Image 1 (tube, rainbow, N blue to C red):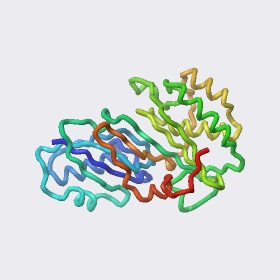
Image 2: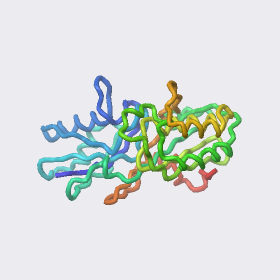
Image 3: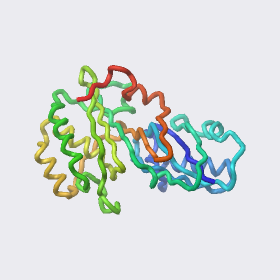
Length: 269
């Protein structure tokens, strides 16, 4: 019997979603908790992977149980889980839909603050940028969706069966003072560290360290440079996963503070 779990987590204390040896991950926390409840091993298959320190305002994984449960599983899990992980919904599914392979669209947001703020240090990435040209960044953003092979913007391209992505949308937002920035990326899939590499390169363009022409040549080359700089992890949030059979808004109130739901705070560049 298949269930989808709709969750959110603050990734600061974890080495990402996927279980790894000798480090703590979100998948391990859930599998250990479920195994303790049901007294048998229950693999948790996620909608994707997040890197160490990256957050998820919305994340789905599926599990298969031997029979339908009668307990209040959401309540029990939330009592067991640490405070930086939450279960929002548990959904009984018809058939065997797959949390990863059936996802049709993923949206990430990347947050940056350019003035030091101790309350944002784990929720947004601090870059001391005194003079950044948002128009240059906007011009660079417009050319990215013209490409589909993002091998040049992947940290480990050979580990992917394909480096083709259908990048549907990239947007840049800023507040009135332009000291808070938000990049939003929507695609059918993303490659390893692809968003953080893009963000770093866009910041280089905005500060004059990289030209748009150089950036586009790199995209066309499909060559991953031996040394790739990536943006900090704490500014990155997986914020929306859409399925043909399931479309649920994020349930994370803290993300609402950072996201566009505060009227008038974010303006599209």
